[in-house]
Length: 196
Length: 402
Image: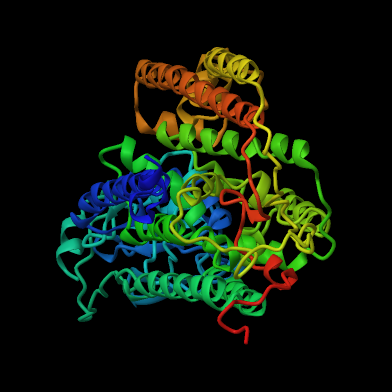
């Protein structure tokens, strides 16, 4: 007994410590492997589902980025190219001109361009867009719903927990597969998703 | 809905494509993991081999700049606890490999080399370390009492993450607002209080809040190599006695005269009764609070808001209710989901309470047991490996001695 305790190679304390260390290591490794196995199946990115979105405006203020990584995206395939655009003009606008007093967008981020009578093209100037969703609401209420809020992945910094997601009243944010990072709703969806 | 048909253009107008820029390359994420590993390895070398306080200090400044201000505090190991918890409880939830790496790598380093992650890789520790000018001793009792808070915080964070309610560590993260220059007033105040009190109470977040620190504390106790105050043999000069700003140096305990057998036996019986008693008491107390705890959950809040009689006119309905109405979900489903969550909280709060009671009991028991100790040693659990004490030791390594 004495001899054993003095022998540094067979030291009970050290043996126990090594055993404990090994089991902790196996524990950590096990959890990591379990989670990694799930993850290998596919990387994910944050995205918001326009079908659930109620355009509350929190996207504009809750993103860690200023301006927000959520932008209004124009799904052209769904657009009716209306002269009286519910997403561009404030309700009860008298003259359909590009005057600032007529515009719904607070940052003048939507550009209106004449194509041919009576059609107008609307494009989003994304650096100006703050993701407030006012135009999305307008287009959804009076038009085809071709303006939709989406997280722009070239801007998103992929927070551990999306700070808009935790304040979204409609629970519209979720992680989606990185291979299909955009969620559009409506009739133009397939066409847009297959393009790319 | 298609209210207006797509026009047929005659002017040869080409409809532009909807741009869908892809996710940023994973390269940046991989770089974070690489930087984390290299910084950890470097600081471990500085702590254990070079024993250089200046080196650790400079590394912590780098970490603060890179992980804090450049990467804006995300991904962080502290918050990763919640992702890992949620991924373990929710099968559909998948976490990025980076988050797993940020959770696991510091734990493994700690298992082998002590809490070198805290010394100067974690930006939270680094920012507080920079302001600890006049650290005061708090005394063992106050340290022990305040040291219970991280267990509560960890328990709540795990409970809320497991029930898919919220990531409270991220929501109440005091320093991320500073790293991003976008703190709300409340969080800025919180960070300010921590930093100002940090002048006198070194690293208040790390010691009395950090939930990841709890895990590191446990794991560090098994560490293979750990920083020592003296490079050779302690000569009991007492110079290091007041050197630790975190009260993490264990003083020598003269235990030459072992206490009487009957006293030891009585202590043992007391511990065997008290520890389970506290665990059950804690579980019972927390389970009484489960409905309050569940009140944080969004689905429970929605169900409660729907249960309330229609409020007086003039108060606009909340966005949550608007969203619920537009989703077309039946009310009964909301109630059902909320009842499931409250049930989860009932079980969860029992576990949380038992855990806290157990921790309290064990910490009490630990104070009853006298362990003999000859030298001044850093406490393997609470030591942040900041290497301040090393400079106070007059002993030089034997190999340098002539």
